[in-house]
Length: 194
Length: 213
Image (tube, rainbow over all chains, first blue to last red; front, side):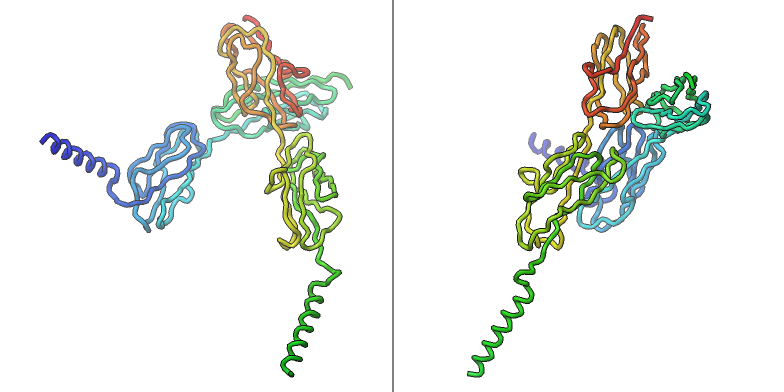
């Protein structure tokens, strides 16, 4: 008697679990794949407008809980994406399931911002090279300079990698963390002779 | 009887045509060559048999590039050959693909229409670190441009960034966040990565000096 009750409840639990897993559509194939470029929460994807799948920050793979039938259409869409991304793509976003599980790569591109400033005092002196880590920019003349774009939330630190001939340059506002386009870096050069 | 002579003639004809095809003394010859990928520095020498060939970057040194190579002496059809890396550039590790037990590629001439042995080079990268003087406060954060962020523990005498830096790439160590109660400055914070790690023992090491504020 006790066993029977246990069995019955186990069977019910199984049925419930299957129903919650299987969702509306029934099938045997899994949809999943790799995730790249996701450094914040907020990514939610769907297949054929079905139930939400939330992908957390720094997650590197995902699997839809709902299995799909063989030879059916899949269509991966983004319900929402992390606030620090400018786009997210699924590859392939749509297609037909064949006989095997489907692999769809999810990739997000983190928003980048420009990193610029002005140089004064060169007055024709040449050879100045500015660097933000490995990113080098040779500055030929006074005026605006532009470093490589930097991802939102990343730090930057602009240094003088090479001083110009016969001048010494210093950097102000050269260090920070990217929250928007940066344009206030000031490089001031003072002549040291000829 | 007639049949026999036909057979004999046929046999003779076949011998003659084989000789024409094979070319007894005119065996097909093969150039042992291929491509080196991502070669950026001088110092690569390849070896096959008793031939040694130096392969150099064609474009600006320091820029990874694809360079084709060919050993001067050809080898005959059917000759076994081995291509191996005799020396790599000081700044790179070069390996023959697919490599055997001794970083070499073995095959015989004629197995493929042309001999095309691939060599892949990888430029070394090294740790970026330096000296810290007088740090007592917590919260010092160093950056190397936008590439790497490092929190330095109070009283740490040295620091090392997690991400290695490629030889000949520039680095720039800046202070993103000052430690509590102190002001730090960086000396020798910017430079070009040598063909060795930057540590507190390097000449003109990157140095972070901290004083109480």
